[in-house]
Image 1 (cartoon, rainbow, N blue to C red):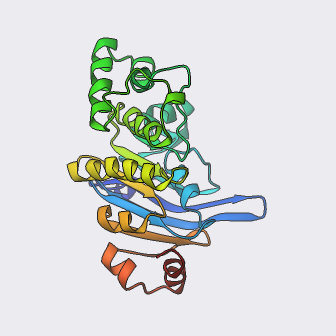
Image 2: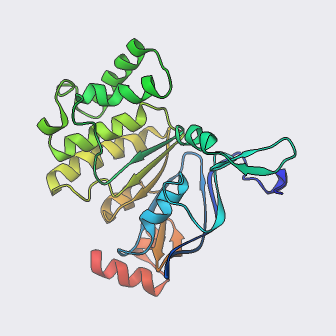
Image 3: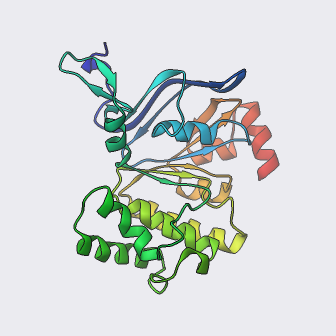
Length: 263
């Protein structure tokens, strides 16, 4: 049984505790622990295969793990607490927990038969049972916010990759998440479209209302927006600190090796 005294404090929105994951003989995550404070922007850096995306996906349990515990906003993911204080697995409770977490994928995952506007308002209405007229109005405001006010009635096939990713960001924001997760959101885009998406993300960071965990290889972007940079290699965290400390004066050899290749 886990006592109340061991639960994350109210200022912590993500608390990963000793997360380990393996697929057969392949060890993907090795005893990863990380706390993210409310309002903090944390960027995960590291070489391909370091475990960054795998770890990001454990936060909302898109990836399962063999050992450890994951808490978001004070609640253990995938579990509900019984009257006795014990935790029991509960898939329905997990679905409710995920509504509080926005996830922006590498590939946009938009509904091809829906317009940009419909893609944004569909989930709040269908999942949250929000009033349709209110959701449509809010979706329009979000598309304006990401610079797509003139593309609301277009289908994904008529939009560039960068525009589709901005629709995906607006769709995630429409759920009013307490936490936003970004999994290499520009990896499938050319440089011009990358700039469009990073600009939207920079604006979100400037607003300061949303906690973010971002996997990216965009070093200049990481330096500009991150409160903290976490470097992963070989399935575990090797270094973390402020952008200046990690990017300008790395102490771990794996961090130095990674930065030498990408900077």
